[in-house]
Image (cartoon, rainbow, N blue to C red; front, side):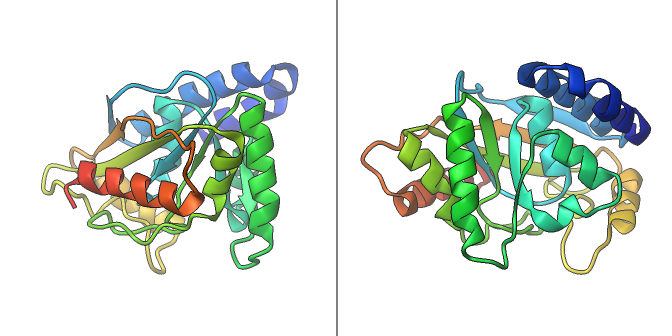
Length: 228
């Protein structure tokens, strides 16, 4: 699957318009999840038109799951861009990279996200800024939600849950602490009945709200959907 993705990025993407590239991204992600042994469940209705997707963050699998449901351009940590091969593939998918250690870099990415939303793109981000174990929600960072506020673009909360045959909240998917990619892959392929549920919640309009208010509403929606 990785080789297939690399070949597609190198020899197919340069000749495709944006929406056709995103279609290929969605197909690739669905096949990749299947190859890893994950069952994919969609709930809710995707928003038609430009939208900012805001999801809880458990694993690198989150990107595959959301893209499989609704291909989007992600905002991701800059260090992923430096991952061998995979970082280049992620960049080819239109990912916007942010240096989270540099506070001023957030403003640069806000402008990029706002421009992409105005062009009609679907943008996805993880307001927690890092992964959790799936049993709770970390505090949300509201800075990047400013892009939705200034462009009057609705925000759609996404609740992600990984479960398996032994637990309603699977430990196999969590990518936390000092775990590396190889360890994560081993845990995933060894899990029995691993399922990821992508629950698309009702869209939140942003008119009349500031980014902190939007953040609180979206976090509350996701927490309620996860039963937290």
